[in-house]
Each structure stands twice: as C-alpha cells, then as structure tokens.
Image 1 (cartoon, rainbow, N blue to C red):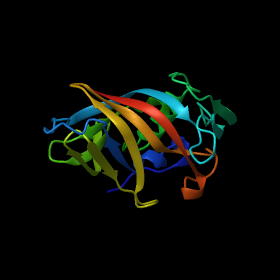
Image 2 (image 1 turned 120 degrees about the vertical axis):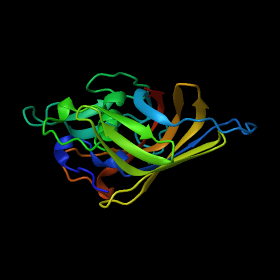
Image 3 (image 1 turned 90 degrees about the vertical axis):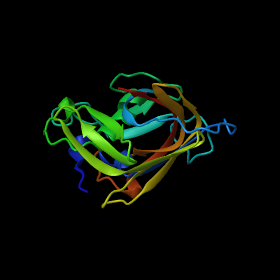
Length: 209
C-alpha cells in the first residue's frame, strides 16, 4: 500500500499512521451493530492540547501553520482548550487536515481535497479521496460488541501509531467519543516524524454519509 506523504499537504502523516481503538462505557451490550460504511469527521472539541504535560487542559500550539502554505507565511497557531470551531484556526480544521492527508489524492492543490473514511463490510479500512474518486485500502477495522472498535492503519514511514477513543457512543449515523492521544504535528515546517509529533485529547464525532 502506498500513501502520499509530503509536507505540502500540511499535516499529512500523523493520522494516516494511526491505529485507533474506541471503547464505550456500556459493557452490557451483547450485540455487535453493523457500523460499516463511509464516514466524515463532523465535530471536534479540543480538551487538552498537550497530553504530555501536567495541565489537563492545555492550549494546542502548532508552529508553521498556514492555510495557504504556498502563498502565506507560516504562523504559530494557538488553539485554546474547549475550542470546537470549524475555522482555519480551529481544532476541527487541524484534526481534519491530518485525516485528509491519509486520502490518496494526487492534485497538487491540497485545498481542493475532500475525503471519507470507509469502513468496508469485509473488515478492510480505506480512505477515499472523494474529490478525485480515488480510494485506497490502508488497513483493517474490527468492532467487538459495542465496547471496542479498532482501526489499524499502516505506514511504511512511521509504522503504526495507536490512538484510543473512549466513552464511545454509537447511533445509526454517528460514532463519537474521547480520543486521548490523537497525534498532531508540532512544527508544520519540519518533516513529519516521531520527534515532530505531539498528542492531544479531543472529543470527536464521525457521521455516516
């Protein structure tokens, strides 16, 4: 499997490298719902911008962020804890940029990219570049009852990065919960790598399309 990893995509690598485990508080559910389908990220609330420090509600700081990297100079983006804005400096925007980087889009203008996460019925996990009608299988997903959903995405560059979403809530159209270790780039002007990642805590929702 081949993914497109370039700094020009802003935050391409981090989530495309992730294995995501989702856990719910409901331990009594005996049936496993069918959650296969295509999903879009629709809501993100920043809880803690740095899970590695002692403050459980830190701001998220990203150096070198730019909404138009080829024309605008980089700046230091500071997103306060509690942020749920969809603006270019909001938590949803930055998390969405990482997810978008997993899609196999080829257009050099990354601003035109749109994507969906496809949990296929056979257990394969794919990312679809909907703006170019291209889809690529990047790993697998497994749901056990309603307590654990694991999406495993592999990368030749960084391997597998585990991310856990807890307090899971599943409806007919949405999956939501708390991601306690979502990987986020520290410096958008430097190459993506394990030394250039920080981990944040967010409340996130994906919605079936």
